[in-house]
Length: 248
Image (cartoon, rainbow, N blue to C red; front, top):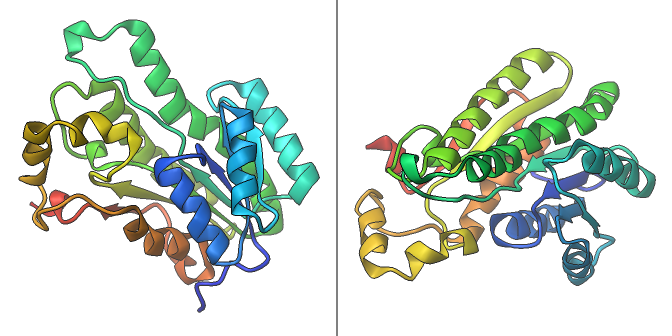
């Protein structure tokens, strides 16, 4: 089977920067029409215009059900039903457990875990009706390992991995699959504090058998594979793109 997404429509949440931005690019390169969203509607539209090829940008806070419903209506009007949903939007607020404010905990869990729940609920029914679809959730190595100070983020990503498994079981036989991509450390804005701290950077590198952080283009193969017909017998899986970290 070809890794060809010509004729498919993909929606990427959090698609204006970092991993999400690169996912939009590789899906477009593979032939898909791309819709992307961000809390900043202007930025989303600007990025979509830069991509060209009919890409469109939308404003949406994925943790707010009403905004997700509005997004679904807008995307359906512009593109029809989508074929590929990439639940990428996410962020972190790091601190030791006793120093984490309840509001910080809630904001991370709401965006990273509730957001995929709401978006999947809004877009997956159309996929099931058509008998073909791909839901790709962005997990993390921190969904299966722990680091001090990362409780909200790690908890949300562990939840994503098991949400992916549940969706796979619920949709088995419908033609719609659910899988997760779990990156290790990549050079994104979210990791800027680590990138700018030589000591912390080296601490992370010690965990990676390949001895370096990942480059964004190294996620491309996994993304296109999971979005394509080539992954038709794969569902409920988590693909770790982490330089061997979780193999230790």
